[in-house]
Length: 262
Image: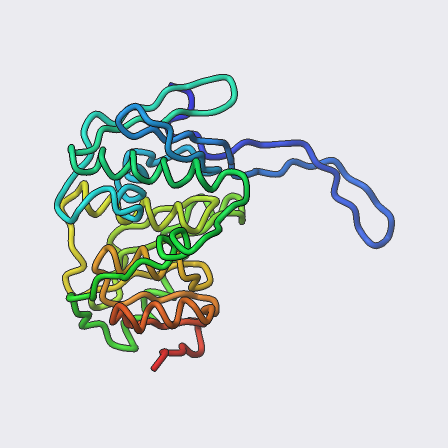
């Protein structure tokens, strides 16, 4: 299948300089394409994403959508090629299938006006589980992970256009990295890779090359992540949701300083 392992394409460009010179060149771009997700034969969502590690993504996305409970896995994950993109099909356990039907019912009701109504607001801000895991990572470990992350981002080095999410050991060693053009997709892929590989946080933490949006905070809480480190700033809702879930949140993680939310 042509899409497996295919993450970039090279295009012709013209390089323009202040002196008015113009030279022919090439540029490597990160591939972005639509991936339609179907659970148990029901169309659920279409994501614009990198066509790699899709089995990991399906698992992590199902966890983030609360369609899979902790310890559950997807069955029969298949990817189909079409002229316009890919179709990612997976089977959920019976209870997950019932949740898909309920979510789709809500989305049909929302289609004319977007997210609206009290019921939908409650769905958007459903209570988060308390994070029970703990991280043994020190400040030095976080700086160590920050300094080495770029060595584990081949797609980013080649294109400069993708995000990464990393599972880090307590000492800051990078254990797994997943990349994608979408920051949410990269984190879903990481969570999915951990679930499919039977891995846990084991006193470590997650490091993401993105701002700490509320969606990423929620994904971390649902995955029982004890510590989320983001290289950019948080939003007010992200900070509030992290406090609600008992998630330790470090932001603006740079080479010279990090900021931990109280």
